[in-house]
Amino acid sequence: MPNKLFVIDAFTKNRYSGNPAAVCLLENKLLSDNEMQQVAKEMNLSETAFVKPLDHSLVNKATLFGLRWFTPTNEVPLCGHATLASSHALFAECGNENSLIVFETMSGKLMAKKDGASIILDFPLNKPEKIDPSLVKYILEVIPFEVKDVLYSPTTKKLLIRILDSYKRTDLEGMANLNGDKLLQCKSELTVKGVIVTLKGAEDFDFYSRYFAPWVGIPEDPVTGSAHTVLGPYWSEECGKTLLKARQCSPRGGELTVMVRDDGRVDLYGNAATVLRGELEI
Image (cartoon, rainbow, N blue to C red; front, side, top):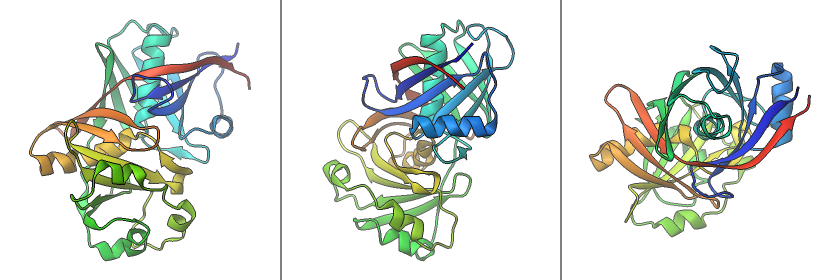
């Protein structure tokens, strides 16, 4: 029998916004690494998730699942929006009867819990460290704003660039997509896998961001859960609060709530909407 396949928009309540992910349920046929990479390339989304029940043969009763994420070019160790999409697929599409499910991943155990219409993801917190800007000076030259802070997350290899508070949300939204080829050519003293450009928020949001990762085949990611495991601890200290509202200002856009915990973890609250239901032929 074919495997079930969904396309789900994550970190949004509305279809055709947020961040789309493909979710493939491996109930009937296991796939090799090469086959999973081929599927992800075919889906051509920032991530395709592959989910396999581990503690029960029935997907609607299992509480423990294996979870892997692939971009069109390679496997990645952590992906927030595809985890949210996978959780939505299990809860909303497959009728999983549990309120809490656990994923075994390259980043350890990740938990997803129902919270009314939302889902709470329990993720590792990846606090960034301030660095000497000269270490990434060529990358900074690609950023079309004056910079206030430069930080780096050693665990995720993400570079966090905070621009001056005098800029507005519209400035960040109006920024053209960073030139991926130019970023790939930038020499750096650090290994960089993604660039977060962030701005202090206003009105309903504590902070804004955009995220670019051509190093893993993603020119721009619309809404990025893993980036908020880096943004959360930074803005928690800057704002003096642990519960934060965030807006990722990509052309599609998306929103999430971030709760920074004192146990080295972070909770990401989000919604999702199913766009496509189908079957995968291998």
